Amino acid sequence: MQVRQTVTYSSLDSKSLHDWIVKAIAKAQITGSPILFSYSQNWECHNPLLLLASKADAQQPTFYWEQPNEDLVLAAAGSVAEISVPNDDSSDRFACAKKFIKGHLANAVTAHSHDCTGSASATSIHIFGAFSFYRNGSNDNNNGKDWLEISPPHDYQPVIEFPTLLFFIPRWMVRHDSQQSQQVCTLTLNHYIQPWDNADEVRGCIEAVRSHLLESTHYEAPTVHEVSKIVEVQGQQIWTEIVERALTLIHQGHFEKVVLARAIDVLADRNFDPFQVLHVLRCEYPECISFLLDCGVGKTFLGATPEVVLQFQAQRDHLWLRSDAVAGSIGRGKSVQEDQILGDRLLNSEKDMREHQIVIRSICDRLQSMGAVLDPQVTTSLLKLSNVQHLHTPITAQINDPNWLIALDILQQLHPTAAVGGEPRDRAVCFMQQWEACDRGWYAAPIGWLNGKGEGTFAVGIRAGYIQGDRARIFAGAGIVANSQVENEQSETTIKFAALLKALGAI
Image (cartoon, rainbow, N blue to C red):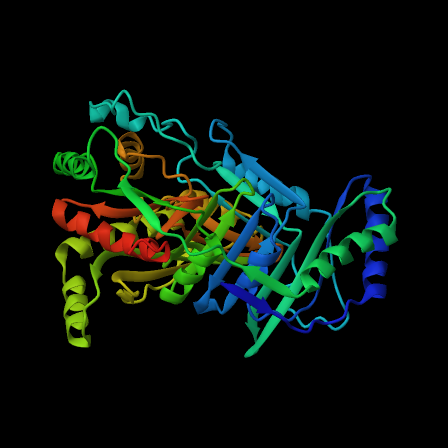
């Protein structure tokens, strides 16, 4: 497959750029330290994913985000600053993230061309990244060991796939969003300026990146692959046996709910193309947030998720918050009538409603524990995706704190919600970490973005998996509660696997 994209771009305001660089160098000299410089201008790009696929450097971090209900697309690559906390590091990763953000935004200089129509949000400095599901690779939840009175298989050692934290500030970013009913596309170029830098040389570096993006976009996807093998990742016990063990503990009163994930490895005769896989996902699931994050080391995490763990926006002296309660699932019907019957069955399912209420309660309790004031809840409704429908309740709140970085404290408190973890959380998570067949990595964990204006969104990394060369590992989970049926839960995960399997060309 060959795709070309030829567009016209706004000219670079060289004088404006030069003047701002001079100011940034002066600030760096006054502070005696490097200064993050960010410059934005109007841009025209009809296909940000194609631009990213053709211009991203395989050795640098890459990020893509498409959120249809917000009419927002973000595509970014390269890195002027990043933080990666390895899994064997016991540091507080959320505190590390806050320190990283503060350190790089504190003295940053943001500028834009005279004719730039992008909003203050669009032209602010954006930071992208993800947290892993668990705090680190070892079991750091001691709450479960005494009461479980069981031990995981001795010969099983989880394989850690991703750092516990990865945040980066891109070298370039394209943001496509809607402002006052008009589509606006903004290009932002970032550069670190040293006190001894020469303004003309800095401008030359920035213009070189822009010129690279300006070149006609030509992207040639690899030859279509054939899937050679599909195998379920298993430990000493098969997944259904682990579900039965969890049900026994639930009936004994150890926890109300636990979410257990399955993993499948998909092998092909040649390398997968992550951008092509994501393109299929975004077309098949237009209601979902499509995302992609590449560490720059040959591993790409991608998916299409229906669930936001935290969206926030600074508003004067307070912070607006939103978190989605998504739990309870059923398939889609082959006809409108059958689909309605299935939807009604889900809305009237005692088991699924109980599971959903556990998630609502856990989110509300954790928001209130942080001092947030909840808005009146809307009615639970059906969230209909291409292959599955869920119970969905959006929860909104406000917290009176002028420091928007408290959003990361709130994110830390929310993750994992009962939709992907369990309740009580510590006991459920301990069981999951001991018995699931492989480490989750970034699966079901927060992935997203934030900017210097105190805005951001972190989604739950579900309906997701990672790609490395000719191999892909995909995940699907099911919430286990008191009256769960093992066969039904396995069928639910099979339905959820279908999204990635189809995108990978496996079905």
